[in-house]
Length: 111
Image (cartoon, rainbow, N blue to C red; front, top):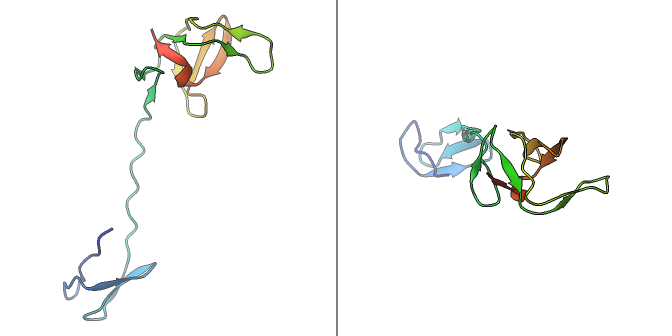
């Protein structure tokens, strides 16, 4: 962050304190304004090949994935029903082989 000019004397020789600025020339003190936070934009989810995914897209598994807590395996090449993007560790929810499942985008490719 660059140091601002003093609002009283317009000199740029200022001291930086945790909650305020202080002008060395005239001694004027003023509060620091917090930096604006970056706007939370739309999260972009990309598949294993870098294609951007959206709600309603169809995806295909690129490798075999074992289901946690089960002995079943989802085979690579299995196509899904239309997907829905969600927040969290698993970015995609969809149905594969009649099972509602959460997937990470790095294991699918857009069809």
